[in-house]
Length: 193
Image 1 (cartoon, rainbow, N blue to C red):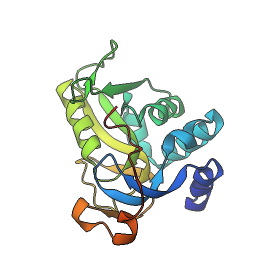
Image 2 (cartoon, rainbow, N blue to C red):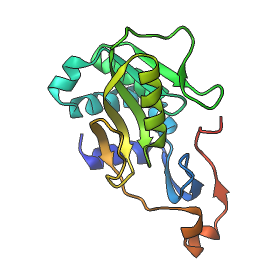
Image 3 (cartoon, helix red, strand yellow):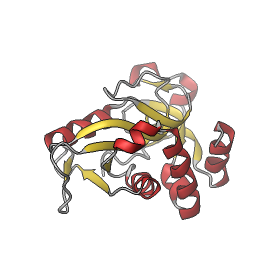
């Protein structure tokens, strides 16, 4: 799937939004990718997951024991990646602010894990999720995401395979351009849920 084909999938369901958004990372942006909208259609979610799975090197695909994703944003694409790879798909939750496996989810000690996210901006959620997998006895061998909007700066500590790189500028609270600051703020992420 080409970058333009991926962007077409987002545009076709109004999942590429414009406004003033505070991202889960706390940074501000004039653009937001609402992955829940792009993934709401099962056929589209399947196409995107299969394309993402093809981005993984053959040796990574062969080594994966289980797919893990952080709630909320990563659940759907994580599940679809599990289907595309023929592996179980678990998810992490933050009932007390720290990621953990719940609902009876578990994996064998030393299990090789593919971490799957919807969007990576700073990599903070991914690093927290990777640490949670380590606490549970697993080893994240790679991460895959629909979108990398870190401009290549996210250091996850593992190989990272995004379907597409989208480099919309993001701003710290004290860097917001006046035109963006004048727009009403929306907090569309799931970090506070």
